[in-house]
Amino acid sequence: MSSKALKIVVAAEEEARQAMRSVQENAKLALEGTEQAGKEAIAATLIRAETEVAHLLRVTDSKAMEEARDLASKTANRQAAQRARAERLLGTAADLIIERIVNG
Image: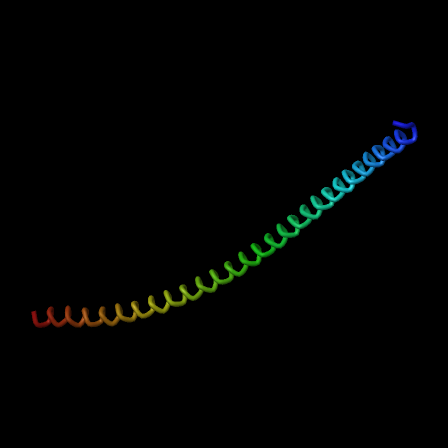
């Protein structure tokens, strides 16, 4: 092979190595950028999820308190109705006891 041809081959090989290094460096930078973008996306998703969970907890707590107040109100109404019935029955029972004692 001639000296000129050898120089051309060596130059082409060096150019190919430089191109390969450039491609590898670009790939490395692209990968790093993609990894960073992925980390940022994960962080943003976690923040959104935490915010949504906090909101759902507030809504759930609010509904639970509302249902507890409703239940307490219904319980108080039932208690009042049972107390009125018991007082009515107590009066009837007292009348029956007095009648038996008197008629006895």
